[in-house]
Amino acid sequence: MNTTPSSETGSRRSEPAVKIVLSVLYVALIFIAAGTINWPELWFFLGFYLISTSALIVWLKKHDPGLFRERTSVAKRKDVKGWDRIIIRIYSLFLLVMLLIAPLDAVRFHWSRVPRPLQWLAFAGILLSWTIVVWAFRENAFLSGFVRIQADRGQKVCTTGPYRLIRHPMYLAVILAVFCLPLFLGSLYSLIPAALIAALFVLRTDLEDKTLRKELPGYSDYAARVGWKLIPKVW
Image 1: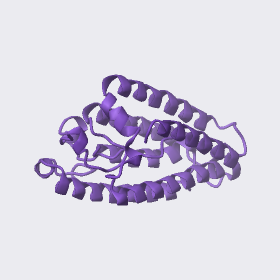
Image 2: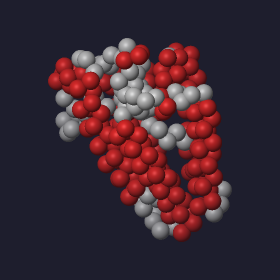
Image 3: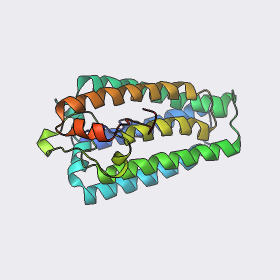
Image 4: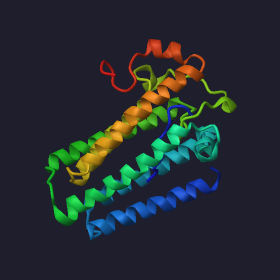
Protein backbone atom coordinates (compact mmCIF):
# COMPACT_ATOMS: atom_id res chain seq x y z
CA MET A 1 0.00 0.00 0.00
CA ASN A 2 1.21 3.45 -0.81
CA THR A 3 2.05 5.04 2.53
CA THR A 4 2.41 8.53 1.07
CA PRO A 5 -1.02 10.03 0.42
CA SER A 6 -1.21 12.97 -1.93
CA SER A 7 -0.43 16.53 -1.09
CA GLU A 8 -2.82 18.99 -2.61
CA THR A 9 0.20 20.99 -3.93
CA GLY A 10 2.04 19.16 -6.03
CA SER A 11 12.54 9.82 -5.95
CA ARG A 12 13.82 8.70 -8.38
CA ARG A 13 13.10 5.62 -10.48
CA SER A 14 13.74 3.35 -7.50
CA GLU A 15 10.94 4.85 -5.40
CA PRO A 16 8.08 2.85 -7.02
CA ALA A 17 10.04 -0.36 -6.40
CA VAL A 18 10.58 0.62 -2.76
CA LYS A 19 6.87 1.28 -2.37
CA ILE A 20 6.05 -2.12 -3.85
CA VAL A 21 8.42 -3.86 -1.44
CA LEU A 22 6.98 -1.95 1.51
CA SER A 23 3.45 -2.81 0.43
CA VAL A 24 4.33 -6.51 0.27
CA LEU A 25 5.88 -6.30 3.73
CA TYR A 26 2.77 -4.55 5.08
CA VAL A 27 0.54 -7.30 3.69
CA ALA A 28 2.81 -10.03 5.07
CA LEU A 29 2.73 -8.45 8.54
CA ILE A 30 -1.07 -8.24 8.41
CA PHE A 31 -1.41 -11.94 7.64
CA ILE A 32 1.18 -12.83 10.29
CA ALA A 33 -0.80 -10.84 12.86
CA ALA A 34 -4.00 -12.57 11.74
CA GLY A 35 -2.38 -15.99 12.06
CA THR A 36 -4.09 -17.16 8.88
CA ILE A 37 -4.52 -16.30 5.23
CA ASN A 38 -8.21 -17.18 5.44
CA TRP A 39 -9.54 -13.64 5.65
CA PRO A 40 -11.97 -13.00 2.75
CA GLU A 41 -12.51 -9.31 3.53
CA LEU A 42 -8.79 -8.58 3.33
CA TRP A 43 -8.36 -10.51 0.09
CA PHE A 44 -11.33 -8.65 -1.38
CA PHE A 45 -9.86 -5.28 -0.40
CA LEU A 46 -6.39 -6.20 -1.67
CA GLY A 47 -7.85 -7.20 -5.03
CA PHE A 48 -9.78 -3.95 -5.26
CA TYR A 49 -6.72 -1.92 -4.22
CA LEU A 50 -4.39 -3.65 -6.70
CA ILE A 51 -6.74 -3.31 -9.66
CA SER A 52 -7.79 0.29 -8.97
CA THR A 53 -4.28 1.53 -8.18
CA SER A 54 -2.78 -0.18 -11.23
CA ALA A 55 -5.47 1.34 -13.44
CA LEU A 56 -4.78 4.79 -12.01
CA ILE A 57 -1.03 4.44 -12.61
CA VAL A 58 -1.59 3.35 -16.23
CA TRP A 59 -3.98 6.24 -16.80
CA LEU A 60 -1.59 8.71 -15.18
CA LYS A 61 1.39 7.60 -17.26
CA LYS A 62 -0.65 7.98 -20.44
CA HIS A 63 -2.61 11.17 -19.76
CA ASP A 64 -0.38 13.15 -17.37
CA PRO A 65 3.25 11.95 -17.51
CA GLY A 66 4.39 15.16 -15.82
CA LEU A 67 2.36 14.39 -12.73
CA PHE A 68 3.51 10.77 -12.83
CA ARG A 69 7.14 11.92 -12.78
CA GLU A 70 6.34 14.34 -9.96
CA ARG A 71 4.82 11.63 -7.82
CA THR A 72 7.71 9.22 -8.41
CA SER A 73 10.50 11.71 -7.74
CA VAL A 74 9.20 14.21 -5.17
CA ALA A 75 10.42 12.48 -2.00
CA LYS A 76 14.06 13.39 -2.70
CA ARG A 77 13.40 17.04 -3.47
CA LYS A 78 14.89 19.60 -1.11
CA ASP A 79 11.95 21.99 -1.42
CA VAL A 80 9.51 19.60 0.28
CA LYS A 81 8.33 21.19 3.52
CA GLY A 82 10.12 19.72 6.52
CA TRP A 83 6.97 19.58 8.61
CA ASP A 84 5.28 17.50 5.91
CA ARG A 85 8.06 14.91 5.98
CA ILE A 86 7.46 14.57 9.73
CA ILE A 87 3.70 14.24 9.26
CA ILE A 88 4.15 11.51 6.64
CA ARG A 89 6.48 9.55 8.94
CA ILE A 90 3.96 9.74 11.78
CA TYR A 91 1.16 8.79 9.39
CA SER A 92 3.12 5.73 8.23
CA LEU A 93 3.55 4.63 11.86
CA PHE A 94 -0.13 5.13 12.70
CA LEU A 95 -1.13 3.28 9.53
CA LEU A 96 1.07 0.33 10.46
CA VAL A 97 -0.47 0.23 13.94
CA MET A 98 -3.98 0.33 12.45
CA LEU A 99 -3.18 -2.46 10.01
CA LEU A 100 -1.77 -4.64 12.81
CA ILE A 101 -4.60 -4.05 15.28
CA ALA A 102 -7.22 -4.94 12.66
CA PRO A 103 -6.12 -8.59 12.17
CA LEU A 104 -5.48 -9.08 15.88
CA ASP A 105 -8.99 -7.83 16.60
CA ALA A 106 -11.05 -9.14 13.68
CA VAL A 107 -9.35 -12.51 13.07
CA ARG A 108 -7.03 -13.74 15.81
CA PHE A 109 -8.71 -12.65 19.08
CA HIS A 110 -12.17 -11.38 18.04
CA TRP A 111 -12.12 -8.49 20.49
CA SER A 112 -14.97 -6.76 18.65
CA ARG A 113 -17.59 -7.52 16.03
CA VAL A 114 -18.80 -5.42 13.11
CA PRO A 115 -22.22 -6.36 11.65
CA ARG A 116 -22.06 -7.49 8.04
CA PRO A 117 -24.33 -4.68 6.73
CA LEU A 118 -22.05 -2.12 8.37
CA GLN A 119 -19.01 -3.76 6.76
CA TRP A 120 -20.48 -3.36 3.27
CA LEU A 121 -21.62 0.17 4.05
CA ALA A 122 -18.00 0.86 4.99
CA PHE A 123 -16.84 -0.57 1.66
CA ALA A 124 -19.24 1.80 -0.06
CA GLY A 125 -17.40 4.55 1.81
CA ILE A 126 -14.09 3.21 0.47
CA LEU A 127 -15.51 3.34 -3.05
CA LEU A 128 -16.62 6.92 -2.46
CA SER A 129 -13.17 7.89 -1.21
CA TRP A 130 -11.57 6.30 -4.27
CA THR A 131 -13.98 8.16 -6.53
CA ILE A 132 -12.84 11.42 -4.94
CA VAL A 133 -9.20 10.41 -5.43
CA VAL A 134 -9.66 9.66 -9.14
CA TRP A 135 -11.65 12.87 -9.63
CA ALA A 136 -8.92 14.91 -7.96
CA PHE A 137 -6.19 13.29 -10.08
CA ARG A 138 -8.17 14.01 -13.22
CA GLU A 139 -8.53 17.69 -12.37
CA ASN A 140 -5.33 18.62 -10.55
CA ALA A 141 -2.08 18.31 -12.53
CA PHE A 142 -0.08 19.31 -9.42
CA LEU A 143 -1.26 16.59 -7.03
CA SER A 144 2.11 15.80 -5.50
CA GLY A 145 2.85 13.26 -2.79
CA PHE A 146 4.41 15.88 -0.49
CA VAL A 147 3.76 19.53 0.17
CA ARG A 148 5.91 21.75 -2.01
CA ILE A 149 5.31 24.73 -4.28
CA GLN A 150 5.98 23.40 -7.77
CA ALA A 151 7.44 26.52 -9.34
CA ASP A 152 9.52 24.30 -11.63
CA ARG A 153 6.28 22.91 -13.08
CA GLY A 154 4.46 26.22 -13.30
CA GLN A 155 2.00 25.32 -10.59
CA LYS A 156 -1.41 26.97 -10.75
CA VAL A 157 -4.41 26.84 -8.45
CA CYS A 158 -6.86 24.08 -9.37
CA THR A 159 -10.46 25.33 -9.22
CA THR A 160 -12.35 22.62 -11.12
CA GLY A 161 -13.96 19.30 -10.21
CA PRO A 162 -14.05 18.63 -6.46
CA TYR A 163 -11.99 21.77 -5.90
CA ARG A 164 -15.11 23.80 -6.68
CA LEU A 165 -16.61 22.46 -3.45
CA ILE A 166 -13.71 22.09 -1.01
CA ARG A 167 -10.05 23.06 -1.11
CA HIS A 168 -8.51 19.72 -0.06
CA PRO A 169 -10.59 16.84 -1.44
CA MET A 170 -7.72 14.34 -1.33
CA TYR A 171 -7.43 14.74 2.42
CA LEU A 172 -11.15 14.21 2.80
CA ALA A 173 -10.76 10.98 0.80
CA VAL A 174 -7.92 9.81 3.06
CA ILE A 175 -9.89 10.49 6.23
CA LEU A 176 -12.97 8.73 4.87
CA ALA A 177 -10.92 5.71 3.81
CA VAL A 178 -9.07 5.28 7.12
CA PHE A 179 -12.36 5.21 9.01
CA CYS A 180 -14.07 2.86 6.56
CA LEU A 181 -11.28 0.31 6.11
CA PRO A 182 -11.22 -0.89 9.77
CA LEU A 183 -14.99 -1.32 9.69
CA PHE A 184 -14.88 -3.27 6.43
CA LEU A 185 -12.17 -5.54 7.84
CA GLY A 186 -14.33 -6.12 10.94
CA SER A 187 -12.35 -4.28 13.62
CA LEU A 188 -13.66 -1.59 15.95
CA TYR A 189 -10.44 -1.25 17.93
CA SER A 190 -8.45 -0.22 14.87
CA LEU A 191 -10.67 2.86 14.68
CA ILE A 192 -8.46 4.29 17.47
CA PRO A 193 -5.34 4.71 15.28
CA ALA A 194 -7.67 5.66 12.42
CA ALA A 195 -8.88 8.60 14.50
CA LEU A 196 -5.26 9.62 15.12
CA ILE A 197 -4.60 9.53 11.36
CA ALA A 198 -7.68 11.67 10.76
CA ALA A 199 -6.47 14.22 13.33
CA LEU A 200 -3.06 14.23 11.66
CA PHE A 201 -4.63 15.02 8.30
CA VAL A 202 -6.72 17.79 9.74
CA LEU A 203 -3.43 19.28 10.95
CA ARG A 204 -1.81 18.70 7.54
CA THR A 205 -4.76 20.36 5.83
CA ASP A 206 -4.42 23.46 8.00
CA LEU A 207 -0.63 23.71 7.58
CA GLU A 208 -0.78 23.22 3.83
CA ASP A 209 -3.59 25.70 3.44
CA LYS A 210 -1.54 28.34 5.24
CA THR A 211 1.48 27.51 3.04
CA LEU A 212 -0.55 27.86 -0.14
CA ARG A 213 -2.00 31.19 0.97
CA LYS A 214 1.51 32.55 1.53
CA GLU A 215 3.39 31.03 -1.40
CA LEU A 216 1.04 30.12 -4.28
CA PRO A 217 -0.19 33.09 -6.35
CA GLY A 218 -3.96 33.20 -6.65
CA TYR A 219 -4.65 30.78 -3.83
CA SER A 220 -5.90 33.40 -1.37
CA ASP A 221 -8.47 34.58 -3.91
CA TYR A 222 -9.51 30.98 -4.53
CA ALA A 223 -9.83 30.38 -0.77
CA ALA A 224 -12.08 33.42 -0.49
CA ARG A 225 -14.39 31.90 -3.12
CA VAL A 226 -14.28 28.32 -1.81
CA GLY A 227 -14.65 28.75 1.91
CA TRP A 228 -14.39 25.14 3.06
CA LYS A 229 -11.18 23.16 3.54
CA LEU A 230 -12.54 19.64 4.03
CA ILE A 231 -16.31 19.50 4.58
CA PRO A 232 -18.80 21.96 3.10
CA LYS A 233 -20.64 24.03 5.69
CA VAL A 234 -18.43 22.58 8.45
CA TRP A 235 -14.71 23.45 7.96
